[in-house]
Length: 149
Image (spheres, rainbow, N blue to C red):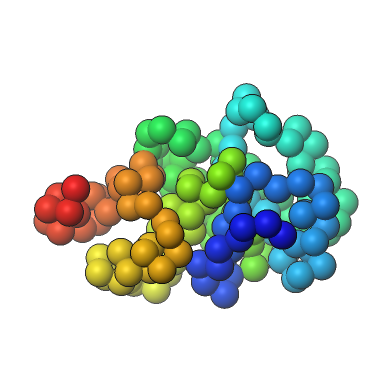
């Protein structure tokens, strides 16, 4: 698969995947796919659910906006991740939203400190200004995150 980032043993992120990459993901042991793209985005794979399920992957779609945070959709994406069989391949168009959501889920599950989150983001090349991640940091680490912006 092209350009994936393993955030944890359970979560890997990528940009838009092809039908061949879905098949490859299944062969590599992934159990599920979480698509964070909106159906009206350019390049959205309209039959991705069918393609994922055809190769044995569970599929979920939570359309997050790339330009602004939406707490309800972020919570929905985290809930989907909690309920999907692991490991999960999370993707969006280029990987930024997927990286943000994967890092939030990892932070919640592992109880990471702000410093641990920023260190992990740096290791993986995840931008802390990604809207969903930035909102999560401001909500959960208000004193620290305000000084980092």
